[in-house]
Image 1 (spheres, helix red, strand yellow):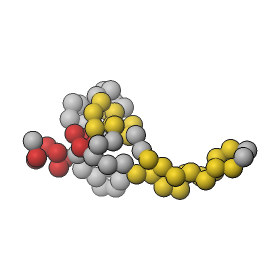
Image 2: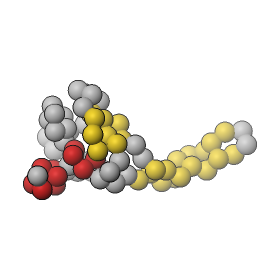
Image 3: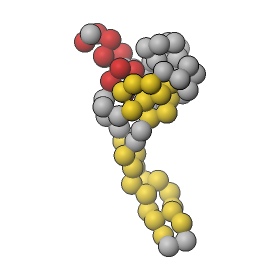
Length: 72
């Protein structure tokens, strides 16, 4: 079943898995002297590193999105 939330359009090009993925993100965290607080914002783009947790395939996010399949 395809994704319809924050992973909409994602699919591993190697094994076909729809989730989960380890994605390198840029984030903002409120940090205190005694530790960090909640993550407030995380983002990635087509050039962010991505790994399929199911099969270990690694690449960039752009290679894991359905849009990239139609561009190739």
